[in-house]
Length: 161
Image (cartoon, rainbow, N blue to C red):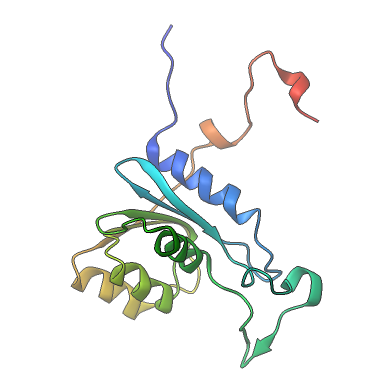
């Protein structure tokens, strides 16, 4: 009997999905996982500055159609690396949604060379051009039903509600 482990791209994207579940944004829940050498070095989700009120509690603070309260998931993950002195050069990032232009620029400036994303979301042509110009790459991950259709815990079904 052979045992098949979840592939890396499915595993890391799964981590980003879990992070998105912590989002305090009421408009779009996004999660991001930064990986270097097949190890998670940081994670982030979109939400308010630590110590500020959250959109899920107080509503969005919209200016020109954009919530100015929210820090994007990618930014939170990169800032976590900066805060704790973790190098991002040569890393990869797994994001639940295609990064916005500002996050794409930040990802590239941080030295991250590979962007994996799950869902298209207002994909920006200039962001795609920048990724190509600087020699980075972007790839959409398709989740496999084999790993995500049902969580499988063997005979330990009593741990599920």
